[in-house]
Every structure is written in structure tokens, then in C-alpha cells.
Amino acid sequence: MVVYVVCYDISDDKVRERIAKVLLKYGNRVQYSVFEVMLKSQSELNILLYKLRKVADENTDIRLYRLCENCRESSCDLNGERIARMPAVVIV
Image (tube, rainbow, N blue to C red; front, side, top):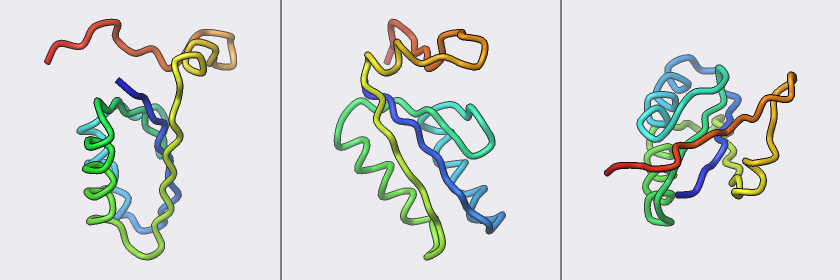
């Protein structure tokens, strides 16, 4: 399982809502325009990118940042609490 932080800056409300709907199928919203998504494979990443391109317009700016396990382990919030916790086991 690979975790990505997906963030965007989209001014069009309709496009922003469509992007959020796609991302909610893959992960959790952690801030208004920031999601953490879990992907099982490169092909699942390619599918997500395809779906995002389908609903985006020419002004859409979306960025995906891959979080390695060490990065997730050392991430924290303002209070020093660990963040980016993913389940130890995923039942499919």
C-alpha cells in the first residue's frame, strides 16, 4: 500500500467538488483541499490520475506527493502527535 498526499488549488466550485468526489473514493480528506489516499499499485495510481484528468479543466492544479513509510512515521501535527496513520491491516 502506497500513501499519497493529494492537494489542489481550484477556483471553480464545480470542478473542485468533482475532484473531491473522486479523491474520497480513494482516501480521506484531511483538510479542505488536502487528501491522504492509499493506492495498492501503479495501475491504481494511473486509474486515479485518469479519473482526475477527466473531471479537471485547464486551470486545475493538483499535486500528488508520495509518502514513504519512514516519512509517515516521522510526520506530526503542531502538538507533536503522529499523523498519516494508516491501518495496520486492510481487508479486501
